[in-house]
Every structure is written in structure tokens, then in C-alpha cells.
Image (cartoon, rainbow, N blue to C red; front, side):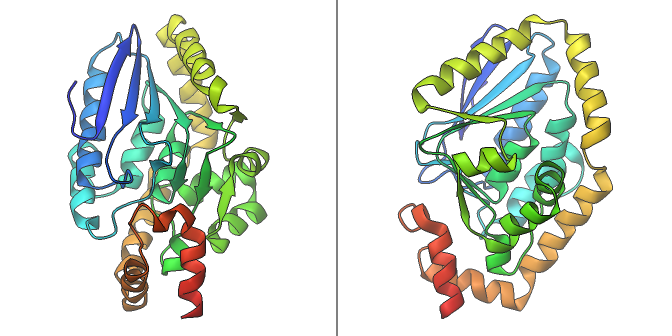
Length: 273
């Protein structure tokens, strides 16, 4: 498997997937195209059981979507799910027979958070992982599953806090809120995740798939709910107020590596303009 934004290594039934999309791992059409191809090829190979997603960038896991290329990345998602929606693409991953594990170091905001939430399990580096949902600060709402997952994982109050504050949340608080399974010291994270992945990969595929299917039946929102959130994001992001705020954010350094080290601060300054 050769991709533009993903580097793949295989260890038996486990694929290690390193996200590499300089300068800051924005989710754009190239990454979505690669994710579609990765899922298709992995599902077609019955010997592959577990996907472990990591980042080659210590500061950014997936920063968020590229707001200048929304139509393009949505079209890439449609090649797998038949609809122009990364929310439906991420839900497809959740429903897949493949077990997906996110090993998170650096920032996972917006669609980056929604991607790790779509994974079956999430483990974060205690020192460096940062999570956030900045959409409300730009006049939009989370459109790729964030609302569905966070409300179920955190409960109403905490989910509203996370999404309406548009603040950054460190790994310790994310663990307390249920955003991730657990945090570990960075030096232990990789060994822990790989050990777990290989353990799961040793078990009979039918049993693993049955467990995922039943847990999804209880906890994974219907396709219609993901589709509605995706539509609302598209509608919200296209409104004049949101477009004005996107342009103001871009002038303040939005979608640049250095400025987004503190995206919450950037959004706060927009509110004062």
C-alpha cells in the first residue's frame, strides 16, 4: 500500500498507519482519498484485522479539515460511501469488521477529534495530546460525528461544554470526560497500543466482529443522524457569517502550523474583533 499522506507498515494481521500530511496534518482531499483506499484495501484482505493510526508529526495528529477545500474532500469520501460526507466515511470505519485504534500524540481538533472518535479505541499521550472542537467559534457545528459520539460518551452537559466553548482540552481532562479510553506516558504509549493490537489480532475474527456489531447496535448512531449533522455543517459553513469568520481566522493565522498551536486563543481573539 502506497499513499500520499499515509505511511503503512505491516506486522502480521496489524497495520500501523502513520499520518504524514505536512505542514500540519490538515484533513484535505488527499488524506480522505488515502483513507478511502486504505479502508477498501484492508477490508479486501481477510488477513488484516487491526488498524493502528498514529501521527508522524508530534504536534498534530489531525488538525481539522481544510476549510478551503470542503467540496473536494467531500467528493473523495463519496467514492466509498456514495455520499459527499466525511461523517459517513468515519461511520463506515466504525461499522467495519476492522478494529481501529487511535494512538494520539499532538492535536486532534474538529474532524481530527471526529476521526479518533470513529475509531474503536483511543489512547493518548499524557504529555502532548490535545483535543478540541472549534466549529462553534467559526459559526458552524461538528459535522463528522462529533455530536453523536461526544453526547454518548460524555453526557449532555460535558458535550455541550466541549463543543460550545471551542476550547482545547488536555489529555488528562479528555480521559476524565471519556473522550479517550485512557492516557499513558508517551514513552509507554506505543508499546501498550501495539501489544493490545496484536492481542486482539490473535483472536478469532468472527468473535471480534460479533462483539463490534453488537456494541455498535447499542452505541453507534444511525446513518441518518450522521447525515443530518453533515448537512448542518455544510449549511453552517456556507453561511455569510461563517465565511466572514473563516476569512478573519485565516488572516489571524488559521491553518498555519505556528498559529494553531493555540487555536483556542486564536478563536478567542476573533470574538473580540
